[in-house]
Length: 151
Image 1 (cartoon, rainbow, N blue to C red):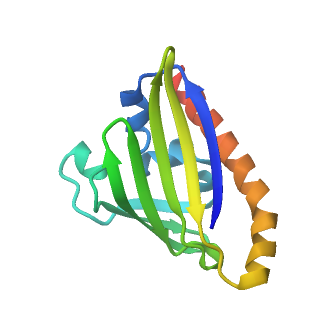
Image 2: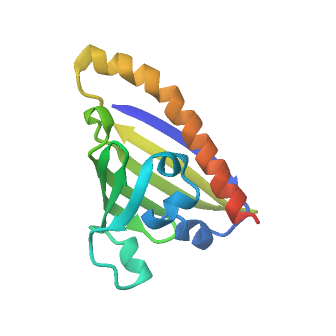
């Protein structure tokens, strides 16, 4: 199983960081969403803001290359949220986790993507090619989020 993990400290309380982790807020700061998404829509019922973060909430991101579906599998308000992604390129089946920890000057946000690459040895080769690109894109996304929240 592969993993990409990056963390950043943001001078904002966990509640403010949490608000930005709703899928429909990703186009504001997430580089991959900005580059590839045509639309982001909840496919589960959303009556309140909290519904966007509840376990079982679902979202579809329509991209240039097809649809990505997200389902929240774990949610602890202002602390941690995990989602399973289906429809990812190359048959990957990633889980995205965001962990929020209060620190002296705000929040430490850790982004973790756990994934399984198919195709045996070819999948391992492909993983080596994409891993570094993913790390850099995640770093830039976290910096954009930090910039927005620290204004």
